[in-house]
Length: 96
Image: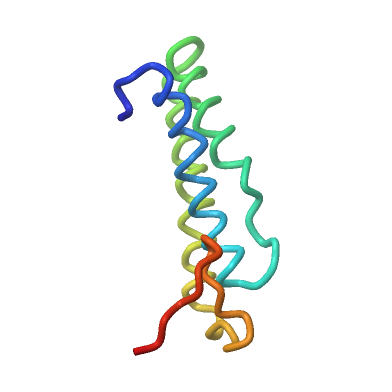
């Protein structure tokens, strides 16, 4: 869906928002800002195409590092307590 013009801009913000939702749920805090990665990816694309390819690539790399660091911290965090086991989407996790 990245090739459809509307979805091209939509997914730049949607997938980092979903990752930030997971990280914040797993950490049980607002540790990752939901809009920062999407804005950084959009700016890096605009800078890469319009101004300087190196600066745009470095900004995209920094955005990837920000997401990777927060995911690493989320997976290293202690397990979510049983009382807060609602998943990020709002549905309950089933224990079989």
